[in-house]
Image (cartoon, rainbow, N blue to C red):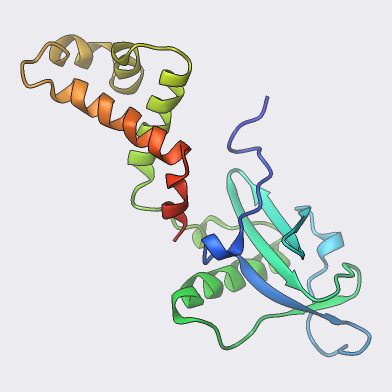
Length: 188
């Protein structure tokens, strides 16, 4: 069974600032540049070819680092280098990705310290759960029970202000917006 934690996904770099751009140099020409033994790492990457570039995605437990390789990719001898100058809006994401990649090289794993959770994560989880329920044919009340528990729904579902019902309706509506392309706004 496939799920969000096992899916192999490559992001389009134009939609997110977290894809690390690296330039591949021939290791025989530039032997003094440190390298990462990609083929020997315990955590194996998934290779994608997307919009004319190779992408390597290292993923574990829902966390990942994605590299977009500019230049000829020969995994056993390439030296990967990053640009020093980049757009200000991409700088923080690129520096975090560089630190994560160095740690991956040194420890062979993606360390949670480099993964920052979006402040919206809890809300988005609720929204996606509500959308899944709606797409599965559940009623709004059934969705509310799965989100908030039977006890709370029993106590608040019939409330004249309809706060809980409105919360479920808004979550479903937001989920539908995300499904129809609104997810792109989350990546910026």
